[in-house]
Length: 465
Ligand code: 4AD
Ligand code: MG
Image (cartoon, rainbow, N blue to C red; front, side, top):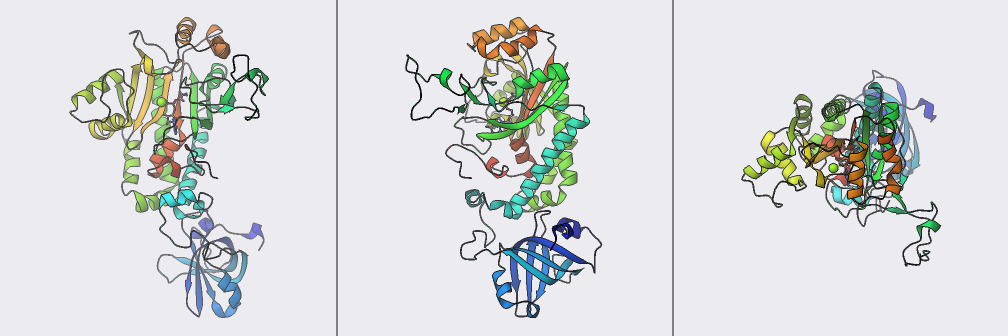
């Protein structure tokens, strides 16, 4: 049962190995049969399809066959033959079976099919063994690979920005603190607050909310970089689109203005979706059949249509004129809610929208200020069913304007001096954006809840695995 001789089921299903002896290893998805034959559906994770394995009961010990139940892990050797049964073209006629591990039918939670996604979230340690999560996680891998390929092919460098930082890039204050203090005995200052000077790093630090600020340092030296790593936000948002730990892709480009930034975001998203359509066909078809009949059509639609480019002021005007009853009323200056974004995308334009030039006061300090004194060169990409999938901007490259903004917002200069120095020494126009990896996966897989596109979701009051 040498591993080097094992075939992946994916390869066997595409092969012309009829009549050949093969070795496969995998987990039993279903078992059925009669007194003469046992049929096992084996899945090894390489593809959504399981391979049918047929054992003549007379050839094997009764105890062995009895112990092989749904959920067990086995290696089987046998001949690949054409199948006369329904639902598969080939099957394996078994000559040898090795049982690696059984799965007690009385306690194995995936004994039966058809569990709800909510139930499967409670068994995140086992849900990868379902067809649904196999498909989702294979697509997740394919998208991660495609992201690296896209940037590598376009001359971007992958920059590893830190997870532990002393800055709050988005200025939203929703951060997880990192400390080596014994929390039962935190050293205090005279004023009675935590004395961070005595902590591991000698100052207050947190898990990063974004790699952008460090990404900008890279772009202003290497030209074009991207980050791709986990980010952490301690906002108490219990929605189907928010995680406390999510992965973000943040390209940052020297010399790009906002329109170049939009062109890149559109090309990048279309590339990724096209990649999924071409390379993840089986998994997408499975998910479309199970959950969302319009999935593939929706993906094609995005690839084939130009995104609408729309200024915030114009967007607000459309929303005000729409006659639509929104839960949150619309007026110039508000941060748009997902219901507003989805109205524009799904009902008004029926296309993805890149919204630009948002009010300065609802956006982060680093965005380039427009001459009108009210708006900044921000861009959010809004997608059907998702709302915001990308947030980005042209960055303020003028030292004085940036400094004034930082002072106005009360951001301590001691946290920002290094960032400000990029504007002091060889400043340049530059832009970038952040794509939420799980938001992309929500769109590509058609899953409805962000907890179902990341292996181990972290959300408020939830870290089991
Ligand atoms: O719009 P955001 O907050 O932008 C930034 O962090 C910038 N620094 C990006 C940049 O310009 N380099 O976040 C970017 C994207 C959002 O559009 C969304 O897709 C995703 O990250 N995102 C989340 N995804 C899951 N859970 C959350 N709590 C998220 N918050 C943001
Ligand atoms: Mg945003």
